[in-house]
Each structure stands twice: as C-alpha cells, then as structure tokens.
Image 1 (tube, rainbow, N blue to C red):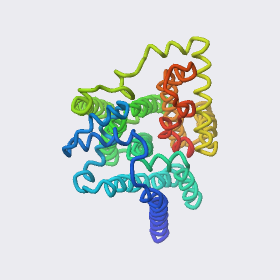
Image 2 (image 1 turned 30 degrees about the vertical axis):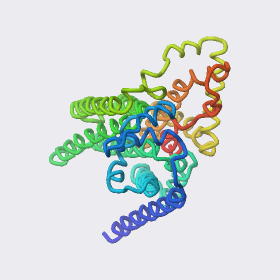
Image 3 (image 1 turned 180 degrees about the vertical axis):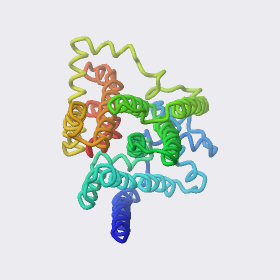
Amino acid sequence: MIKRMYKNHADFFACVSLYIFSLAFLLIMALRLNIPPVIDEVATVASPMYLAGYDWSETLHAMGGYYFKYGGGMVYYPLVVLIKDPYVLYRSMLAFNAVVCSFIPVIAFVILKKHFGVRRSSSWVMSLITFCLPVTALYTLYARADAMLIFTPWLIALIILTLVKISVSGAAGEEKKRFRRKKVILSILLALVTCASYSLHTRGIAVVLAVIVTVLIVSLILKTRIVAVIPSVLTLGAALFIDNAIASFFKEAIYSHYGTSFSSTESFDFGALSNIFTKDGFKAFVAETLGAAFNMIVSTYGLVILGVVIGTVVVIRFIRKRSEASNSVMVFTSFSVILFLGTFAMSIIYFFPYVYDLLKGTGEQRSDWLVYGRYAACGCGPCVLA
C-alpha cells in the first residue's frame, strides 16, 4: 500500500514538474511578443473578432484572402470578450497556447510510464525532449491553429491506447459491463476530439483520416473492435455535420464579399496536380518533397526520420511475431507513423501547384514553400516518441 502510494505521488510530482518547466519555457518566449508577425494569425482570429463585433473582411482581402477555419480562432473567444487591450490580448492568446501545450509532455509521460512500462526517470527525460523540439515549441508561439493541432494528436493517442487496453482486458461480469460503458464514453470522446482537430484547420482532415485508418488497422491486427462502432460513427457524423454548418456560417459572414484566395477548397487548383506527371512537374515535386523532408529533419534533430523507419519496422515485426512489441507500442507507433506520413503527404500535395509555378517563374516568389514544414508539424512529436 505504502509502496503504491509512493509510486503514485512520485508520478504525480513528475507530471507537475514537467508541466511547470514546459509552461515556463514557453511563457518566457511568448510574453515577449507584441504583434502578429504573419497574416495567418489575422485570418485565424477573424472568427472570434467577428462575434465580438469586428468585421475584418476588407483587411483579410487586402492581406491576400487567406482562409482558415473557425476552430483555431474560437478557442480564444473568451479572451477576446474579456480583454480589450490588443497587446495584452495577443500575449494572452500565446499564453493560452502555452497553458494547453504544456500538457503535451505530461501526456507523453503517462503514455511512456503507464502504457509502455518505461522507468519514471527515463519517461521524464524522453517526454521533455519530445516537447522541446523546435518544431513543437515554434508553432505554439503563434495565434493560429498550429498549437491546438499539435496538442490534439497527443490526446487522441492517449484515448486510443486506453481503448485498446480496455478492449483486450478480458474482463468479465460487472467489470466487463463497467469497461463497456467506459469504452462507449471514450469512443464518443475520440470522435469529438477528432472532429475538433478538423474544425481547427482544413488540414485537420489528415488527423481524421489517421484516426480512422489506425482504428481499422489495429482492430484487424488485434482481431477485436477497439471502439464502440455505432456511438463513435454517429458522434463523428453528427460532429462533422455541425462543424460544416459553423464553418459555412463564418465563411459566409467574413468571406462572402471578396471570397478566398488561399487555403480553401474553392481557391485550390486541383487540376494543377496533373502537372506532377510532367517532366517539370515531377522535378518540382521531388524538389518540394526533399525540401519539406529537410525541414522536418532539421526541426526534429533527425528524430522524426528515425521514428518513421523504426516505427514501421516495429509494426511489421509485431504483425509477424507479437512478442517483439506490446500492444500499446504497436498501437501508438501505428497512429504516429500514419499521422506523420498523412500530414506530410497533404503538405506536399497542397503546396505543389505553388511550388510548380514558383520554379517555372510564373507564381508568387515565396521560396519558403520549397522547405515548408508547418503542415506536418502536428505529426512530428508522436512520431519522435514512437
């Protein structure tokens, strides 16, 4: 009893120390910033500002017509209502990002300690390293959807791991009924968090697809349904329907007059993707892929590549011989690799038309799109830990 209490207290203090250190690490940087450095932040915050009575439609049009979904901005709505000073408001938004994202190493610690069985000291160090990656720390310092998109996959991974643990527990009697109720609740929660990721930004669809593919693959490998199918499907369907209605409301309210020029389905040139199969298009595709890979390698100290390679090997060896890895390791690794590859592929596909025009000399001269890594940032942390 005393030994168990000691372990629980030690784990608790480890989580608290991780959170405090991470929060201080982010706040030191966040509270020194004064104004939005990029137009993406203006487009993101336009939704809560509209509800507060400020119409930024002309400003957004003048800044290029960038479109972002409502979720990334609406998390700041309480701050918009309570704080009137623009400088304080902006810093408060970044502080909010820090408060939320500082839970990432805590979740990583729980995954390592509880689900992987890693020692406490090793779990603490590994969790902190995962959080302090440049790709994670950088994108929390903007008032846009990136911070929440980096956070939600960790929460999703923890929910999936808990669902798997329940599904293979072999419980009977009253405990089986209790686990069944818990499975339904967690399945609904998984669907809601997954949809929330999509509400943050259109590229959140990669998170939705990663969750669906992971659930299907893991269920096939373990030969058991790891989610309560009907509750999760109904919840996800209803949530996506509501999300579409809310997104349409904000798009009509803010962009109906001038329209969108970037980051929306109606502004994207899907036909341009056919250029990939041309000689110049293939060269642009290869250059963009190498540039984005370089970005990911540098911003994760090369760990994300190791995560993808080793993670793939772990899953394959698990399928061939289950003793090579635990269920938890296989599940987390599968989700992490699928998420990263999905977000990376989406980044390449989305920016290809712009990179193609850039290299042809007919488009905007934004050479940073050749090494753009922001869209894959939300998949880096879990992949590194895997």
